[in-house]
Length: 140
Image (cartoon, rainbow, N blue to C red):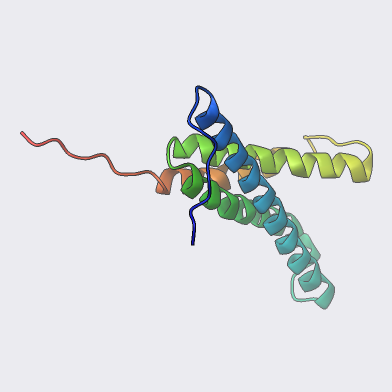
C-alpha cells in the first residue's frame, strides 16, 4: 500500500496538516458519539437502561467518542499529542453544541453543557497523554 501523500513541507504546512487531522479526528469522534448515543437510546427503549442514568450514559458516550477520535488524531499527527487530543475534544464539543443549536434553536451551557465539555476534553486528553513518545534518557 502506498503511504498517504502529504502536502509539501513549506512554512505552514505542518500546522495545516495537523489541523486537518484534528478535524478528521473530531468528525470520527462525532460519528462514534452519535453511534454510542443510538445504542443508549435502544437500551432505554428496551428497558435495560433506566431513564435516570441517561445523563451518565451521554457523558460516557462523549468520552468514548473523544477517546476514539483523539487516538486517531494523535497517531496521525505524532507530535504535541496532548494539544491534539484536547483539540479533538474541543471539536467534538463544538459539533455537539452546533447540533443542539440546530435542533433546539437555543442552547445553554448551564443545562449540562459543562459536564459534556469536561467529558469531551478528558476523553481527548487520555490518548494525548498515553500517546506521547517517551523521552530518551541521556547517557552519562
